[in-house]
Image (cartoon, rainbow, N blue to C red; front, top):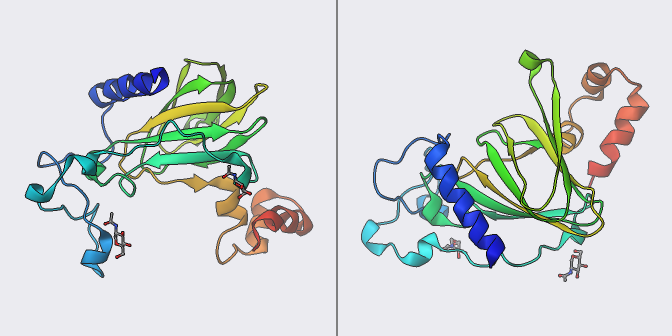
Length: 222
Ligand SMILES: *[C@@H]1O[C@H](CO)[C@@H](O)[C@H](O)[C@H]1NC(C)=O
Ligand SMILES: *[C@@H]1O[C@H](CO)[C@@H](O)[C@H](O)[C@H]1NC(C)=O
């Protein structure tokens, strides 16, 4: 598939020109062992499988040509992820890949990746994307409308989003500079934490009536 070939070229480019955020590997590969084997022991990353037991399948994950089901998500998007949990060969390599499907008018709401910069390419549809700089840069918003073939970068740690502003579905692929970039969804983290952040804290932080905070918390209550 042309789109997949494009993403593979993009990743090859990223691995040469982007400094990985994760620590560099000290061996050819360290295919992740299933966590259950090492119950109760925690390391930075995952334990390595015996190199002699490593197979091509450890570096392989099919299915990125499959259209994701966006209707299970209230904001109309779904992420298919090739990270260290779904592709154990990525352990210690400082890179991962996602496919993102967007329903018409769907969006990947404001979020950050604590451990990875993201480089995204649109392969179908039209996306409005953006990220917000930190206080250091006056919280400036950088946005762009992307069409098929356009690439955009979201720097590590900064709040960013993508919104489908075209007429049909949209599809993007993105490389991230971590085997496990992590996601902090802003709305869910602030208004849907478990247990909830004190309403007094949020009321003062957002400088609104407590009733508004309760309304904002509602979608995240289970
Ligand atoms: C990891 O361990 C769990 C629990 O024992 C098992 O269900 C799962 O299939 C294992 N995964 C792999 C990739 O071996
Ligand atoms: C998509 O997800 C929705 C909601 O979970 C479900 O009802 C529907 O059957 C799914 N569609 C497909 C094609 O899997």
